[in-house]
Image 1 (cartoon, rainbow, N blue to C red):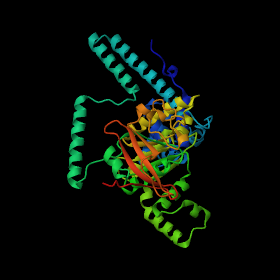
Image 2: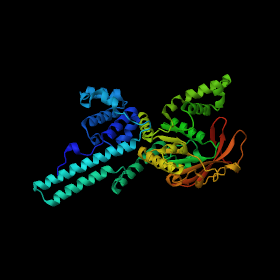
Image 3: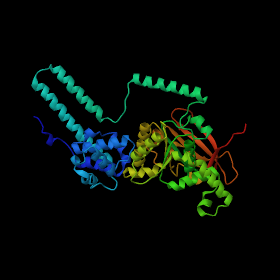
Image 4: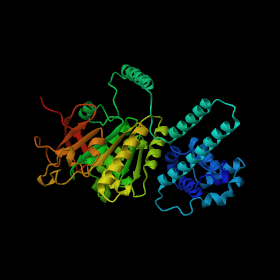
Length: 450
């Protein structure tokens, strides 16, 4: 039986909502394009709209109603897509927080069903013509079905031979880099020499930083992010705790060694304000590599991924640092009924993000109040202390803990802090002694006396 094309599986509403979501937020384009191509849409007008979106994205231009309409009009395709009024209607009925992954899955499923029908009908035609050996027809059908199966998989795979080539190429490249600089090749460096020696910098994967309240988790992440920017590495900082302006204020005060509150209140001495201005000018160029995303319940990782890719493209680098501040707050948007499942889900997505970008992701995690031992005034560097730990301790490649030192003291307002590496998948554990100045938001590594 030959199935008429107008009876083939399709969901026009899902297709419309995918395209409409991109028009409202073009940061979703990369996420959609990882799964769908223009050929996955069932009607020609949707295929044309998707192709023009892809061309705009390839040129680095914004994707919205105006730019897509202009591109269609330039190619004399606007009327074939039912005009500007249809573009405007694409997001009709779109929820405030669209479930874009569900729409993508529906569109992809229908596209695969149509391809199965095409493959089956082609196989039937070859059989009815009775002009080929049955084994050849079976081989052709098997190959087509396997290709369809492969198109359904989001996982990347390589042969051992390919991997040997990639590893050899990496080794040669790193050897050339070492010979050129005279320094060991590391991941993104933190600015704390002791930590970088133990970790070899932040490599690709998920890294966790935990600690009790007031231990300086955000301060340390911000300090390491600014250092990365100064070294030429773009940083995408996703903050659920601080506004974008407040983070930059903290970064400038950190550089100047002044108290942010004095600047906020407007009563800073003229000499302090002069130091603030100097620090701001020193950081103006490096902070062009910093992208701050203010976290919300509607934030999707696709937007983070797009911002990171654009930053790498803009600054002509193949890596970046993504910071999530902090994990438990961000996880609430995952939609599960319990916090543990939310955290476990987000952790998996952050690992995927790191692997797809081939970049390190540094996430701040809360600690469980009982296991973290807050009441005694000392945090715990135990992996079991990670709040709603679930998959956290197994998924991350490094787990770092900030805790007040029991062996060292510091002159107030400074605090002696131990940065403990409790897990490192590819290297040794260790401890880095730090001095924390919470008043000005600075960490420094303490030199150990011999």
